[in-house]
Length: 166
Image (cartoon, rainbow, N blue to C red):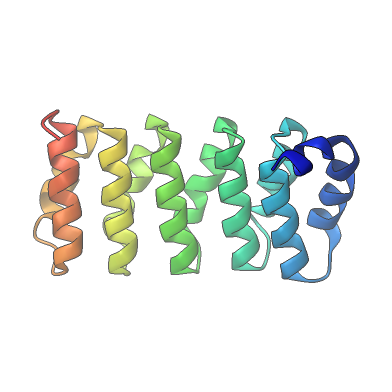
């Protein structure tokens, strides 16, 4: 980590170039990961653009890098990932939104409680538990009846958090 931080001035621009234009997803993903570790606000616009990368691993890494950089301005773009074609991207987006703690994500997370994939519904409930926003109570109450016990249990924990007893 210290080595990466000490090379920040020299590594940042090449990493930004790789993220913008590398042919392989592995290279773009690795660049996004490294930029998240550099603690560089200069990387935020390029990482936000990478949320639209054709490869899901790049979109996932860009989301995590933006969280690491505490780039709250990325929340609306990450909210869009809750509609991504990849369930893995959607579940990660829900987790990232919960960790950002931005109440603007609540309506989208409430919608994600109806996702076709149970693990996305569970991640949405877990994120809502982190946000502790009373606007989610009605949807979380409905989620208590989810056919997947993991979702119902996550909704129960989220309701407890929203009511202040969790």
